[in-house]
View 1 (cartoon, rainbow, N blue to C red):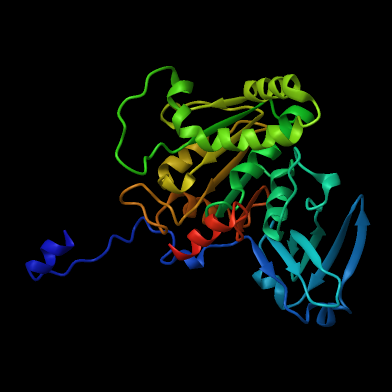
View 2 (view 1 turned 90 degrees about the vertical axis):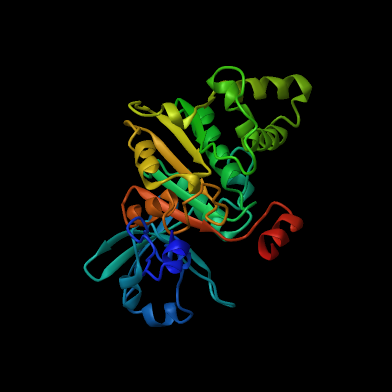
Length: 327
């Protein structure tokens, strides 16, 4: 249309109505570095107290204006104690920071998975917190989004019995040419789309049944499989999920309207995890600014029961890491 308009000498403008952000760089990242002189400036006004295994700090000052509820803050400076915390309360001109559980340590491993970097630790804190109902994870290829969501889901379904099962769905937008209709039931038709799930389950089962031998591993696999349901998005309208752990993969390919349809399926006790890589949108007409993922991150910012984290470092392999950067 714009080329035709140009040829006819007419003015043409981009359609701005469905854009959440003009620039993907402006998207809320979910974490913030504290200034290097943070402790020196704050030392007089910090209140701290202990509750269980967590320490709480009440701080004031210019930092408060930049904070959102459930945002992660970190302070790392040579020679000073590091602080990784989450904003749990903003009142007047003070914020309350709560220290995190350290998932880098093996004793806190989630289904055998430990976090390998700071952002993964933040993400696992959100995924394992029963007070948080909605988690969004963005990040480039190989940052561990699906693996962490699945590991946290299996722990909470099988060990802690917090949810009854994991439901996994994803936008079925193909990268290349379509291969035509697929045979079988809804679950079987979704099979080829769920390669990511299979790869991650293989990895998670390997870590768990190492000493149980072949039989033990097969039994674990059966049990895990029985608790994961794969659903197509096309049949979600009108459903209600109760006490489920719902994973929406490849959410960057959804429109804001589809996103709303999916998130409003949540009944009592359900947790929804949305993950996607905004650099890999396959849906025509969707951009980083108008994607449903961007929309959800932006609208849920600062809600007490929702959290977002942008994963920064790829942990898949040096090849995948380099390819993400240079291609």
